[in-house]
Image 1 (cartoon, one colour):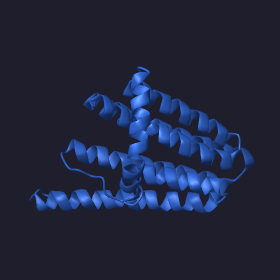
Image 2: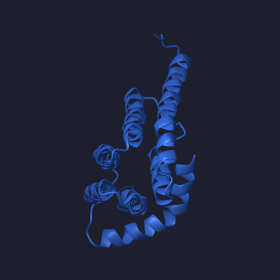
Image 3: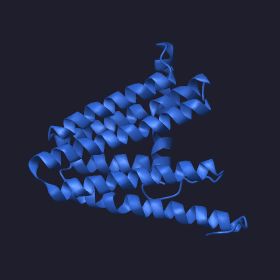
Image 4: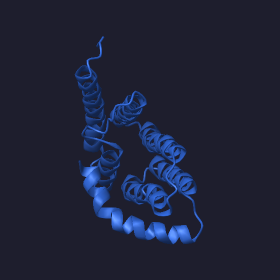
Amino acid sequence: MVSDRLRALLSPVLNSIAGRLARLGLTPNSLTVIGLVLNVGVALVLASGCLRWGGVLILVASLADGLDGALARHTGSVTRFGAFFDSTLDRYAEAALFTGLVWHFATVGARTEAVLAVVALFGSLAVSYARARAEGLGISCTVGLLTRAERMIVLALGLAAGLTLATLWVLAVFTHITAIQRILHVHKVAAAEGQTLR
């Protein structure tokens, strides 16, 4: 999975930054809030129509998003609430980015792009919900082509490269494929455990 390889690649950098942030007295939860604020700021940039710059800033905000977990591990303060809080605010952050895109496309009359952005948002939320619901049932569910990290990479690079329409098509299609992959995964696990399927 791309996100796993990227996380392993960036881990030394994130751990180094996390050590410095710890010395400043920042907490993982405060970084989670800062990450959300950054993403809302990027959403405003997207809403203004600066899509290429928005793509670049998504990469910056995504890097900041990864620091809360690194800081929690560095300080030994990994908690269930922290994981829950991070995941919840991640949903708000992603929704903010797509809302910024929809606002811009609606403003300039780009109906196709606006619809694709909405469809991609629905797919992204479905992917995240599928994992959360599965794990609530005790089933690990990290499978699929476009996890959040991959979605942010595709969105950021696509916008920065000026390939907006193609990027939205990819996200609109493959987020829903990922959700289906997770549904099938949970179905397979449940069947293997001998549970009645309906």
